[in-house]
Image (cartoon, rainbow, N blue to C red; front, side, top):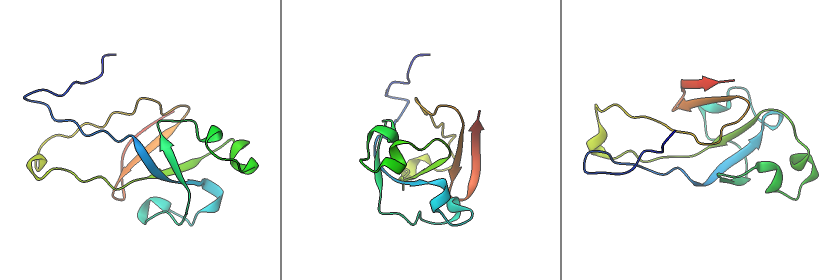
Length: 105
């Protein structure tokens, strides 16, 4: 599938960069309803198993959480906004604020 390209009629915001990161078992219930309680940050895109020296993270198989604040341009109000994730493998759930907006397995 071709990646969208910015044009006169399409604005894009890249979500690459540092995101808050936590292993699922380290979190409070319903972590999508508040800021993740973590000091860890992970680069996106990347494989989190390769980013950390901590053996627990390097060997982890299971759920993890990424969180980031994104500023949406004022001009996008009342517009349809598409989210594209290029490397969400196995399973993913995407929340905007505390609303589940997409998931896949």
